[in-house]
Figure (cartoon, rainbow, N blue to C red):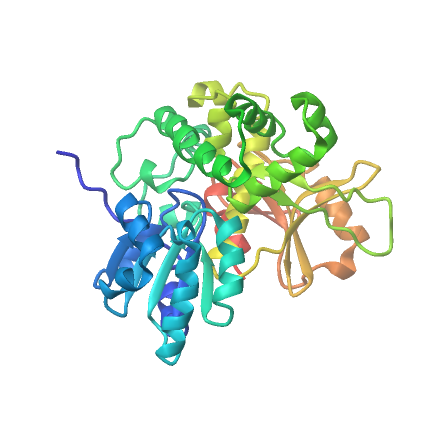
Length: 399
C-alpha cells in the first residue's frame, strides 16, 4: 500500500476561494502535474468531481452533454476541460440560465494554448483564469520543508509529486514526465510526428537556458524551418515548459539588445534534459550558473502569478556588454537584481547593476533597493544594496 501524500498549502488558495465567490467559473491552468487538481479538490472537497481524461466520461461528454451534466449538482470540478470543446459552450448556457451566479464550476486544463481560445469564445466575462505553477521556494519554506542544497534543488526541481512525502527517484520522475506528459501534450497540439527530433529540440533548448533566443541557430541545428522552431517554442511557452524573459529597452537609445532570453519553468526538467542527475554532477556543469539564474527568475514569475498578477520582468543588455540579470517592474518603476550561483559576494558582482542604476536612475523605484541574489547564507546590506540567499528571494519580488 502506497503512503498517502501530504498536502502542501499553496499561495493561491485564498485567491482561488475569493474568485469562486465572484465568478461563475474559475479555471486553473498550468503545466502538467503542477498541482491544479490537488488544489481544486482540496479547496472544493464537497463539490462533485469528474476527470475528462477518463475515456468513459469523455465519451459521455462528447456524445450526450445533457446526460453528462444531469449527473452532477450545480457545483462541479471538471479536470482537463480542453478535451471536450463543446463542454464550455454548454457551461455558458447553464451559467446564463442560472443568472451567472458565482461558484458553479471549477475547470482545470494543461493544454492552455487550446483552453484559452475556447474560454475567450465561450465564457468571456464569466470566468477567472488562474495560473498554477509548480511549488515556489517560498511555498516550500512556509510548509516547513527542509531547504535543499543549491545543486540538489536545481536537479530536483519543484513539481509537487517530488515533495509532500514522496520517495520518487528524481531522474525516473522526469523521464516519465517527458515521455508521458511533455511529448504527449505537445504532440497532440502541434501534430509532431518525429518524437526523436522533438526530444532533440527540447535538449537543444535546455543547452541554451539563460541565453538569447536564436531561432535561426536552432533551426539550423535541427534541420527544420525557422517557422517550425518558432511554432514549437510558442507551444512550449503556452504549455508552461519554457518562458521568455524580454529585454528592457528604454526609448531614448537604440544600442540595446532586444532579443528575449529563454528559461525553463522548472530547473529539474532542464537538468534532466542536460543529463545532470545529481548534485555532484551539477557542481561541475558549465550550465549551473544559467540553471541557477533560471530558478531565481522563475521564482520571481511564480511570486507574481501567486499574487494573481501578470509578471512584469525583464533583463538588460547593451552593445557594450553592460548587463543586469533581472529587472522587476512595479507601476513602471524598476528594481534590478544580479543573480550569481556562488556562495560569496563581492563588489564586482554588483558593478553592472550599479552602472545601470547610475545611467537609468529616472526609471528606478525609489522605495526598493536592488541587489544580489546568491547561493550563500545570510542577508546583508552591502554597498547600499541587498544581498539575499536565493531561498528567501521570493520576498524581494512581492508586489
